[in-house]
Image (cartoon, rainbow, N blue to C red):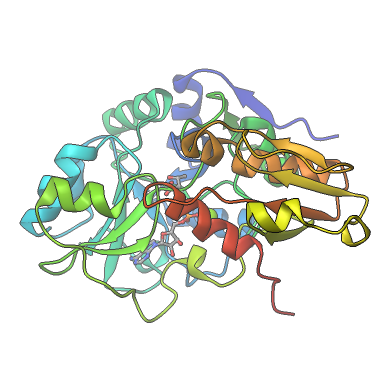
Length: 330
Ligand code: TXA
Ligand code: MG
C-alpha cells in the first residue's frame, strides 16, 4: 500500500520544496507536480516521476506579476494588460526566456511558459518560497504522462503515489480543483495572441480584455504536450456522440459496461451507467477528469460523452475530449 505523505498546510510543502523535494500542489485548474524551478536535479525528477519526454517544456508558476521578469524577458503590451486582468487565474503566457529559464525547463526552446495560479494554498506556498529565494515552481499536471489529469489529492495518489512515497516527496491537499481543465496557454511573442491550448480563459475573454484579435493558427511543433493527438486518455474507450445519436443508439450496439457523461437535461439510455450530470458547462469541466477516472474504477469499457456546445469553456472541454477519444499510437 502506498502511504505517501499528505500535507494540509503550506509550511510543510515549503520546507520540502526548499529542500529540493517534489510536492504535488493544488491549483484552480488541476493538481501540479511541483519542484523548485532553479534546482536542476529536482526538475529532472519531475520528468522521471511523470515518465515525460525531456523535450516537453514545463510551466513556471510564480507568486505574482512582479516575478515574471525573472523568467520572461519582455511581454507585448497586450499580454501585460491580459495578465494584469486575469492573474491569479487559469492563464499561462509563453514569452522569450531569460537565462534563468534553463533548457531543462523549456525543452531547449527559446521561450518559457509562466503563470500565477489562483488557488490560495498554491499562492501561499509561492509567496513563502520567495522568502527563501525560490522564485518559481515548475508544475506539470500531476499525472503519469498521457494519462488523465488529477483534480483531487486522491487522484494524485493514484497517478504518482508510489513514486512520491519512494522518494520522500508529498502531496499538498487543497480539495477538488474548481476549474477542472488545464490553463489556457497563449503565445505572447508577437503583436497578436495565439492560443496554444484552450482553457477557461476563452478567445472572447482575451479579445475583450486586450482589444486585440487572437490570431488563427497554432505552433507548428507540438510545443504543448497536451497538443499531441492522444492525451488525457482513460483506459475506457471514449466515444463522442450527440444527443440524437444517444437517443437512437440501438440497444444491441450498447456494450453492457457503458457509461454516460452528459449535461443533466440529457436522459440516460436504459442499461447505461450515469457518470456525470452537470448542470452547466463549467460544472461539466470541473467534473470531467474525475468522471473518466470513475469509469475506469467501475471497469466500464466505453464512455459515451455528449459534449456541451458553445464558444466558452466548451472549447477546452471539446479539445480534451477529442484527445481522450484518440487511441494512443503503438
Ligand atoms: O493548468 C495548468 O496549466 C496546469 C497546472 C498544474 O498549472 N499545468 C499543466 O502543465 O497543465 P503541463 O506540463 O501538463 O502542461 C503544460 C503545457 C505543456 O503541454 C507544454 O508543452 C506547454 O505547456 N508549454 C510549456 N512551455 C512551453 C513553451 N515554451 N512553448 C509552448 N508550450 C509550452
Ligand atoms: Mg498535462
